[in-house]
Amino acid sequence: MAAASPAGLDKREIAMKKKRTSGKSASPYSGLPKRAEKALRESEARYRELFENIKSGVAVYTVIGNGQDFIFKDFNRAAEKIDHDQRERLIGKSIFEGRPGVEQFGLIEVLRQVWQTGEPASHPVKLYQDEKLSGWYENYVYKLPSGEIVAVFEDVTERKRTEEALRKSEEKYRGLAENINLGIYRNTVGPEGKFIEANPAIIGMFGYKSKKEFLALD
Image (spheres, rainbow, N blue to C red):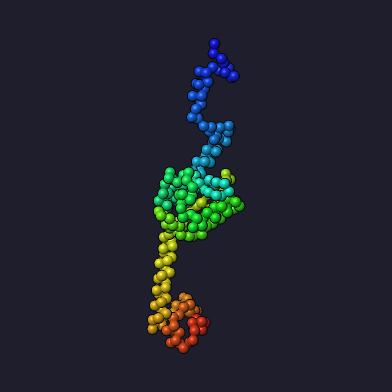
């Protein structure tokens, strides 16, 4: 006669019970009242819709130790488009592996600061570079109640290029205006307009010794 298990079940019954329960994980909603479960599901659905459809890139990190490392936990569609990367490639990887230039970029210190203080912080526009990725980025970092760190970022490379092109254009104009033998000035509009810019040629034409004196004219 076979011996019974301590719970009063024979070996066949124990095996069948294990088979029924194997491979199953506890639901995050288990134990919740139906109304609370419904509210939680709706809240998570709203979060996912916002996360996937916001125009800014969003990266969510799990923190290792006291900020020694940050592991990609999520990466939205906008981030994939901005960085020309895939969520599947990054999830589970260290930020140092997924973004090798992050230390030089300066974002790590901001992530650690937010992790330690819990206070949101911005990382100003700066050039990020590694072997695959290069661009100017602006980041806003905050901490979730779960302890995860979120970085919301924008690629402002086109804006920086426009600003640089404008700066070079202004330098060329200024170089021309400063050296041309023709009087050039700018003034505000209206009957009481005032001089706001003047080149050396026009200052000399009117017999003034400095731009400051010329611009002080009523």
